[in-house]
Image 1 (tube, protein in one colour):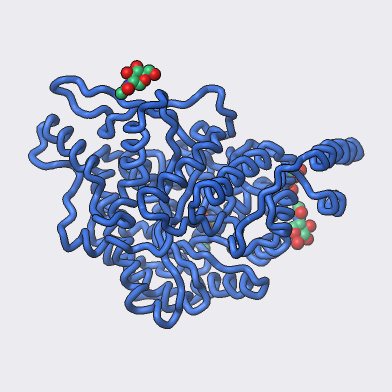
Image 2 (cartoon, helix red, strand yellow):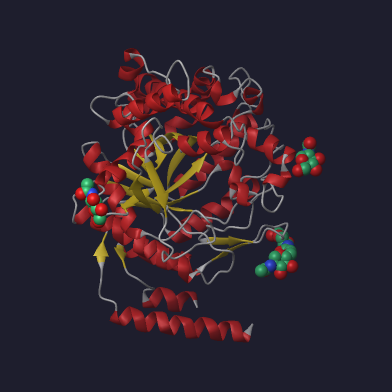
Length: 500
Ligand SMILES: *[C@@H]1O[C@H](CO)[C@@H](O)[C@H](O)[C@H]1NC(C)=O
Ligand SMILES: *[C@@H]1O[C@H](CO)[C@@H](O)[C@H](O)[C@H]1NC(C)=O
Ligand SMILES: *[C@@H]1O[C@H](CO)[C@@H](O)[C@H](O)[C@H]1NC(C)=O
Ligand SMILES: *[C@@H]1O[C@H](CO)[C@@H](O)[C@H](O)[C@H]1NC(C)=O
């Protein structure tokens, strides 16, 4: 214990010395919102409590423990179902403006359908929202973060267009019951990850392994579902609730391998971010033109009578266009991209015609897919702003994984460099970024990685039945950023001393 304290003092001395000489202060714009984010299945636990029904993640992790790196699941997770007051106290200590969390659909509707509303489940979220509001923290509510009722999966899940109706009924219940106290809603989190890893592959629930046709179909239905949810809010609730609603898209950055290969950057963007974003945020709507052409070319060469990319009727194009009040952006990392020349008689490489790689010198995290590339964050913010006429951007996830430990200086370094890149995009490039959330408040169930990769500002002891929470150094650092509304590379002196 004594040597640990000595280490803390020694390290903080280094931080303080650095602070004295650091002179790179950037302020956040007035009214900029700072927060943190979580998702229901990753933190709540209580998978069979409070009258909750089975979700596709309950089913998949129980059936396939070998597909989770440590064989774990979210049955208990951070036990936030019981410890939400402690979570809100942590948020209050941090001083955040908002907390982004998601609602478990089967906790509110145990049969999946809106015919049975589970009051106990609903009360959990009402209590959480009341607790947040009492501490002056704005609730940012995600309706769907991948954990739909298992019953619907047995009917095809997102490959069945009926999901559009089922999730709309659920959304209506949430708006009616929770909407009066919520001003910020998000419809669906990261369609590409859900459809790519859950339907195309067997990496996330429901692990359907359907390949590209399944991914295209899933994305098509998710896009329609989002638009319908938006219109329900817009027509039936907005007038009384006066809130905003948007979608959250995962957009990785792209840096060209050859500086002159801007085509690769654009194609990478259109096939990832643009797939859904173009239909919602562009002036013309619909899928990106380049995507329609490339997928049609490849489908034809593979002998299909129609493109694997389903067609959106002009009615759907109009219905989907403009259905997001803000651009919800999740961003973690970037890739190096290069155009692959198309060979005679062959299709486009990976549909897009772009090969992705990484620069081995980019600093690592605990996640294979996550390298530290702050410049890519600035570039993607600029690209979104340019493509879609400078929409308000809410960064709803950004964060860094490590394996353990509360002295998380690599997380601080990551967050510092990424927030700096974002502020430069605002001040130097004129981008309209309005909010930023660190992923995540707590170490939690990191999907296929189980509990082996930790993203929290707060450490959770998963071997302790109490799921004891211990703030990491990044908590102290972020608390100071929020309190001073300025970005500094290290601690502010009084905060560091008061915590030591
Ligand atoms: C809930 O699930 C746990 C396993 O996570 C099990 O031990 C318990 O008996 C279940 N409770 C009910 C009420 O089914
Ligand atoms: C781009 O630059 C590379 C080398 O840096 C060169 O080989 C290539 O021909 C250039 N391409 C174009 C389109 O100018
Ligand atoms: C976590 O909790 C367990 C059980 O209470 C305890 O034995 C262990 O020391 C704790 N780990 C840490 C790092 O505090
Ligand atoms: C768990 O929490 C309870 C109540 O807060 C406390 O009495 C108990 O000592 C804690 N157990 C551990 C192992 O920390």
